[in-house]
Every structure is written in C-alpha cells, then in structure tokens.
Image (cartoon, rainbow, N blue to C red; front, top):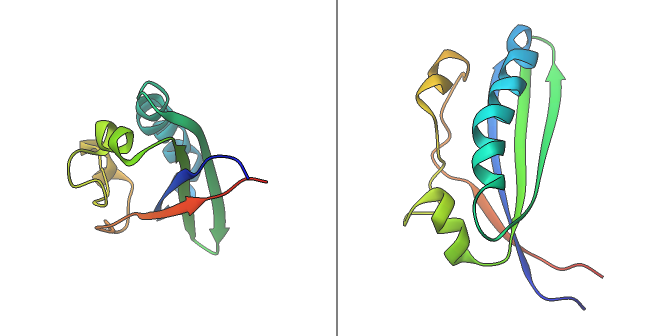
Length: 104
C-alpha cells in the first residue's frame, strides 16, 4: 500500500446555461490556486447536468492536512469561495468533505 493521501471534495450547483462559463471560472480561480499550493497532488473537476441544473465537484488530492490549510485556511473543512461565485452558484454549501485515500 502506498502512503496515505487526503482527498478534498467540494460541491456546487449552477444553472445549466452557465455550465461552460462557470467551468472556465473554476479553472482560472480554484484550479490555479490548488495547483500553486504546496502539497497539492492533483485536481479534477467533475460536472453533471440534470435538467436545468449543473453540478460541479472539485476533487483534489493532498499530501497532508497542513498543506490543505495553506489553500483553505485554518478552518480547512469550511468551503472556500471567491467573490465572483455569487454570480453563478445557486447555493453555498458551508463544508467540504475530506477522505483518507489509499492507492494500490
């Protein structure tokens, strides 16, 4: 078994008509910030359209909680939002999910 990794999962929803625009925004903001943070191992964005709603999940992997805090702040289980998110998101989920991740 390889060393333990921590996966951070954030979820948000937009109107389906804004799906492409929000994806571009996520790449310019969140993805850029994730990738420049020490200890970030990977970034994936999952997207699913259901009728007129589009779900987004950012799934990032990290080498430690301490490095997640460099991205998210001391209260690292709280979701991190950007000012422009209010132009797109239908709600602001307060928490993210962290999971121990094991690769084989």
